[in-house]
Image (cartoon, rainbow, N blue to C red):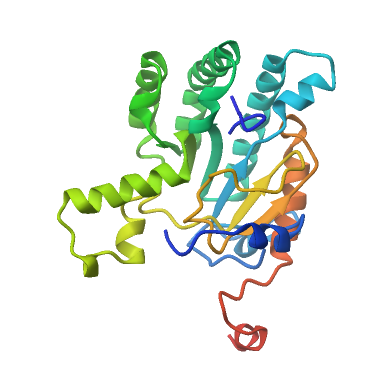
Length: 280
C-alpha cells in the first residue's frame, strides 16, 4: 500500500538546502496539545511531534533485494503501515500523514498500480474496525475523485465511519501532489473572487487538503533518499527532516523510536536565537 519506490498550514516551501542541512536525524519539543500525560519509553509526551509525516520509500527495492516481485514489497509495506499506525496511536501522536500514492505514480507499470490499489482495498477492509476501535479518524489528502470507483467508494465509507475518531487523525496522501494542491488552492481564490489582500498565509492554509490540522513537526523518509518528492511542500516549511537508510518494510516501532529520539534532541527555533528559546 505504499509507493514512492514505494509510494507513498502554512509558510514558505522547504528547499533542497533545508533537506540537506537536516541530515539524517530529527527535531525539538513539540507544543503540548492536551494529550494524556505519560511517557513513551524514556521520551516525554511533550517531546513527541503533534503531526508526523512519512514518505514510505523502498518497498520495491526491499523486494528486489530478496528476489521477490515488487508487489511482495508493497504487501510487506502495508504491514509496516499497520505497525506504525498502531505505535503512533499508542504513543499519543495526534496526526499521522502517510504518502501512499502520488500523482506521479500513475506513470508506474499498470500491473503494479493494480496491485497497489488492491492492497488499499484489503487494508481498508481489514483495518476499518481497528481504526474505529482505536478512535482514529481517516482522511484523504489528494484528488479522491481521480481514484478508481471501488477504491474511492471504500475510502468514502471509511472516512464517514471513522469521522468522529477523537484520538488521532490518519491522513492518507492518495493521488496527491503538493504543487497541484497549491494550484487548486489558488484557483479556489480566483473562483471566489478574492482580492489580493484576502490572500494570506492563513487563508491559503485553509484551502489546502490539510486545513484545520497543524503543520508536520517531523517528516521521515525511509530507504536513503533525501528529497521531498512533491510532498507537503507548503506545510513542511519548518518541519524537522529525518532520513534513514532503512527500507519501509523494515521500519518498525524500534525504528520509529530512533526517529522520535532524534527529533526530541533537536532545537526548533523558528527564526529566534537559542537564548530566546531557553529564556522561555
